[in-house]
Amino acid sequence: MTNIEKLNAAFVEALDLDPNESIRDSYSYGDPKWDSVAHMALVVSIEAQFDIMMETDDVIDLSSFGKGKEILAKYGINF
Amino acid sequence: MESIFNLQGKVGIVTGATRGIGWSIAQALASKGMNLILNSISNQELLNERINELKENFKIEADGFLFDVSEPNSVKECYNQIFKKYKRLDVLVNNAGIMKDALIPMISSEMIDRILDVNVKGVIYNLQYASRLMGRNKSGSIINVASIIGRVGNEGQVVYSASKSAVIGLTYSAAKELASQNIRVNAIAPGFIETDMIKDVPPDKFNKISENIKMKRLGTPDDIAKSVLYLASDLSNYVTGQVLGVDGGMLV
Image 1 (cartoon, rainbow over the protein chains, first blue to last red):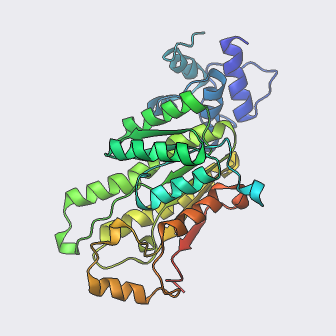
Image 2 (cartoon, helix red, strand yellow):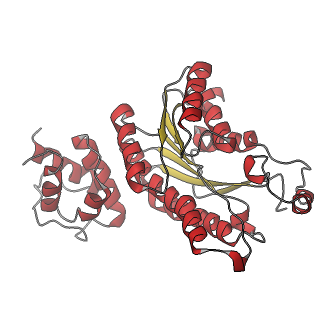
Image 3 (cartoon, one colour):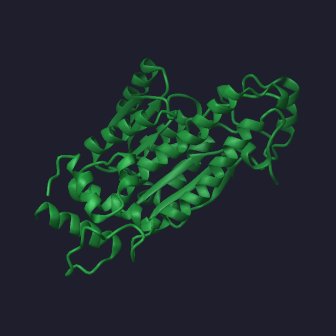
C-alpha cells in the first residue's frame, strides 16, 4: 500500500466513508461523518496505519485530509 | 470463571504504583498475568525493587517510569515507550494522587494548583494517551481512583474533595465519549483505607470516621485492588461510567 492509500484507508475505516471514492484534500472536520467523536477514531486509525504516535498538538491540528498529509510529513511519512 | 479473570498477555499501567493502594493494585493485576508498567513520582530505588519483585513473583514483563503525572511531556514519553515496546495497552489505573488538608481560610493558591495538577490534570493526561493506544484494539479499561470524599465532602478537604469530584465527573464524560470504541471508564471511590495517607488524621477525627464504617473495620489496599481486578477483567465487560464505592458501607 502507498502512503496515500494508507491515509485513505484510515479515513474510510474511521469515518465509514465510501471506499471507492478518493478523498479530497479539502475534506475537513465538520464535514459529513467527521465530528468530534469520530475525530478520536480517526486519530487512532491513522496512528495504527502508520505505526506512529502523534503529538497532542497534531491531534488538535488535524483539521482536513490535506492537513493530515502535512502533519504526517513531520513523522517522516511523505506523499 | 478463572479464564475471565485471566489477564495473561495484556498490558496495563498503574500510576502511583510503588506504595499503598497502587502497589496492591499492581500485585493483583500481575498475579493474573498482566504485564505492567509502574509509575512513581520520585523514588527510583523503590520503583526498581517493585519491578523486580513483580517479575520474580509473577513471571511477567514489568517496566517502570519515574515521572510526575502532572507533567504532560513526561506522560507522553511514557506512552511513547509503551507504544514502542508493547504496541498495545489494555488497562490504565489512574491511582497517583495527593491529599493535603486545610481549612478554608488556610488554603493557599499553591496548594490548590498542586492538588488539581496531580489529581485532575494527571488523570486527564494519562486518559488521553491511554485511550489512543486502547483505541487501536477497540478495547480497554480505564479505572480512576476517586474517593468517598469526592462524593460527600469532608471538613478541611475542600480542595481534595473538589479534585476527586472532578475525577468522578470526568469518568462519566470519558465513559460516554469512549464507549463507541469499546473502552470502558469507571471510577473507584475508596472509603477509609489503611495507608500512609491517613496516618496523620487526628485521633478524634479518626474515631469519628471509623464509627461510620458499617462493616466495623478500616479498608485495606487489598480491598481496593480486588475491585480494580473486577473492573480490569472481562467480568465487567458491560460496565462503564460507574463509580464503585469500596467503603465498608460508609454511605448506607
